[in-house]
Amino acid sequence: MTSTAELPLASPAPAAVCDCGVPTQGADPGVARSLAQTFKALGDPTRVQLLSIVAAADAGEACVCDLTGPVGLAQATVSHHLKILVDAGLLTREQRGRWSYYSVVDGALGEVFDSLVRVLDRR
Amino acid sequence: MTSTAELPLASPAPAAVCDCGVPTQGADPGVARSLAQTFKALGDPTRVQLLSIVAAADAGEACVCDLTGPVGLAQATVSHHLKILVDAGLLTREQRGRWSYYSVVDGALGEVFDSLVRVLDRR
Image 1 (tube, rainbow over the protein chains, first blue to last red):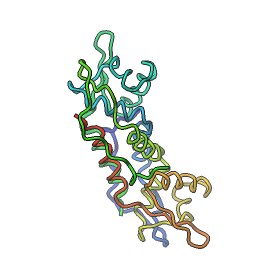
Image 2: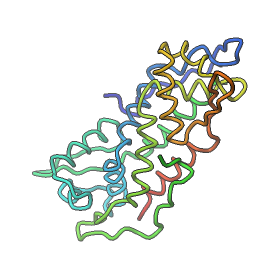
Image 3: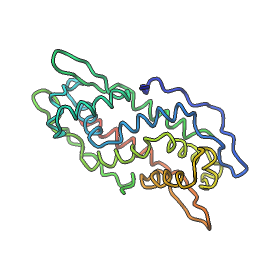
Image 4: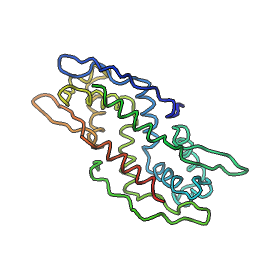
């Protein structure tokens, strides 16, 4: 999957419009797909919670073993949700011994938001 | 469905942490649900495209009749995607005669990201 850091830049050229004033094509398809993938990763309350808990962890990282309790789900389910957040470029994962540790990718959400703003500002 | 304008504020109180340094609970469940619903609405490339096209329309609004061509989908499918964006509080819909016209809700995306930032900044 494409991480948010690899999002191609939206074209700065104004979109061509029909005589009704509406652009005849949307944003760059690759940008739209990357954005949608990231938003889909965030489109689940448990994943929003996991991101929130990892972001607030004292050491800047959280062991998967400490994430099951707060969200009240089995470790396999939590690991699945975490993998989706890692694939979307929002978390990083480091294996240390038996456990995986997760950290928020600095600036990833800002990049997503910036990319969305560019997609919405094509006039 | 809850519009983004109705997102409850995240609690400003720091999250309690276990002795491993990880918060013992996530963000406010209502906030997490509202955010996830909005991100789910954005989690589809066609909906990102539609939002982009409506945002770039000259008059600040676009008729559904002018949106089918750019995304190459049937009107019923486009209307379904647009309804999801309206339900998420990202677009407004106005019926005029035979056609529906869509506009981007000013500030809605900014509010969503502000809410997400608060959720991620609970330390």
